Image (cartoon, rainbow, N blue to C red; front, side, top):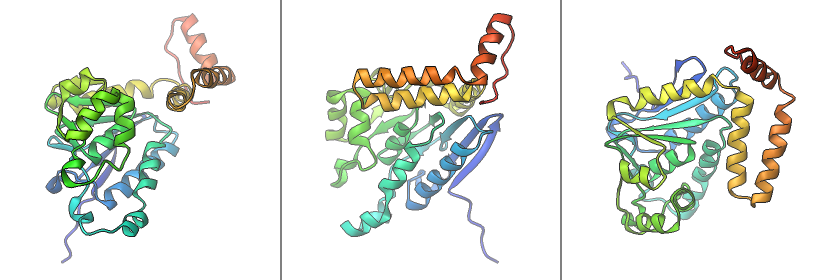
Length: 261
């Protein structure tokens, strides 16, 4: 009889309008091998295109969000093999999801796990969570955006301190430096993430997607360009049914019903 192998990434729907993606390699502390990366990209793409899902939660388990790349999978790899693996393309796919993604981090989020959390839009961390980019300790550097996203999140000097030493970052330190959005008790991380995702899912999806696009595009643009993006976005939203419904509901003192149109 052939043993059934559990999926290394699970897709769930814990609440209306909410999709949940769970990394499921507990024996390897949720290390990000190529299979996991491909499945993350697949599920995020599918949820990003599914109109019934308006916000996504990404999580692991109580011991690890993802404790880094799978070193055993790459220890003997050469330059061309690493190029052909195409992980850089998978990272771009993961980061390109048009819908809000909340990282629910318990335990370790190290190396690729920290980079994965940083591709998300909101990071909720348990009190015992640990972040870090320890790649220098094994002779390489972050390869999933760590040298770029961490300085953008916390500033050059804080980022350099951790990128050059490989030291771990506590949840409190991560919150204080702006890497984490909110700290919650370890046992409540996933529940809090789902509650927040449902709160976002109840809002008009076109406006939510425009917020995400304006922020992300504007971060790498001049202030004038970013303001122009914002102006065009708000003007465009006045053509939506949700804008009419939202403002009418506000005036009539009732709860709005947003349809994403």
